Length: 133
Image (cartoon, rainbow, N blue to C red; front, side):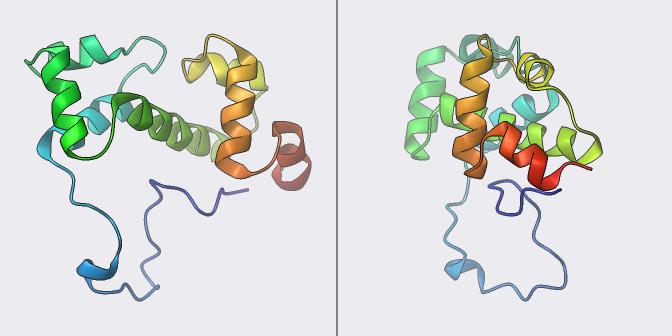
């Protein structure tokens, strides 16, 4: 039932990894890494860019500037954190879309369904038919 091509998935240990310069990933700054840690460990329904910036001891403008230096933004990192959390929940057990959307911090269930299709290429119901236990 796993989503196999996740942005945040850990590589399998039996797969040979190419040299670091060929991985195609940018090294993350300390700020971007800390934002991801906060998002992955926090309540996605309540975390906003300004509160994350405050917890890092900087202004929202500084946070935006530092993330931009890493060629990213808060919304992109939030989306990746939601995708990762969704994968983790669905690996344990199937949840109704409405419940999962609320847990991931979506105000509208349809926004979650659109994001889910973007992440997996399948609608939530198609995914359930294909992968649910």
